[in-house]
Image (cartoon, rainbow, N blue to C red; front, top):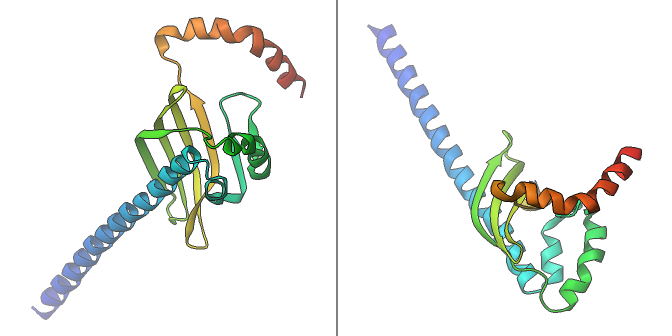
Length: 174
């Protein structure tokens, strides 16, 4: 009888601890999703307000920005140089997230996201990776892509071909 009671207590405690751990993990992820969403929403707000310093403070020092043009792959310093004239005009770009997904690494130090954005280019996709550095989420990689509806992809491809055929040859040479 004592063994059965003891085993029952152990199993009950184990089940309770598993349930608490799952709830804590879920709570932690929900809080961190809110923190990351704030970083990404701030990124959009700082660009719209042409707040150069705060915009780039959201990026890790070793980060990469990949733009919509195949030639746009910049480290943070290069991106800052490219973007400065836009920010100096008083309004860089204005993006609003319409839908966002956030996923975490098992240890919770990395997160990756994808989102649908309302932009001056119509619908775009933002995606990337954030790292928790010194207790703050920083953008390590940001990829901005334009979307092309399937119904018009053939027309868009014909329009791009004269420009990108030469680029394809150059990329293949390297």
